Image 1 (tube, rainbow, N blue to C red):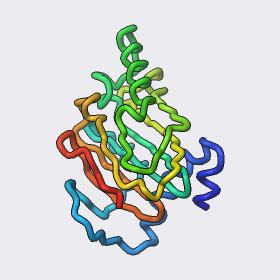
Image 2: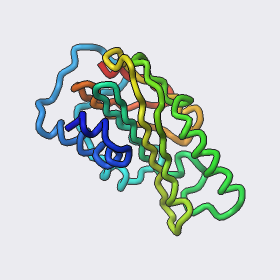
Image 3: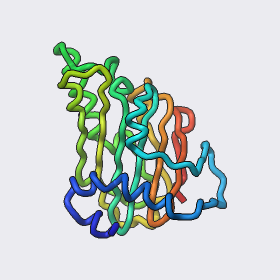
Length: 196
């Protein structure tokens, strides 16, 4: 199923990302990792929908799913973490701020450093459509697809997202990479995680 998921169309991968990431922990034994971490590590897994619905300012959810030579990254966050507002953009300055945010997020390599794996961005999609509608609590999502020539060597991530968007206080990173899964809480001071 993962192989079909990763080699299917991009929208199908986006729709199935949460199912793949969170169905497996429900049926698997909790994994114990035999290495030390420089971050908080928990084995509780949350559903993306619940985290988005919580709409907690200062918090971001980032999920990674990888298998074969493909890596899919999905992020969900309240818009206020990236902008000084979360209502529909009304002024030219607000519309420009949304456009700048979308450009920064679409440039995934500028804020997500993958350690190992030799991964290249294939496609990204930022959805900030809620900022053009009538809402007072807009969310922003991102989906990015990478092609990796040495996925077995993908060992960790470093996030500089905190440098670009200082309103982000905490990022929950959840991953399933080549059958290994885990979770880490990252902050501006503690922005690295080992995936294996």
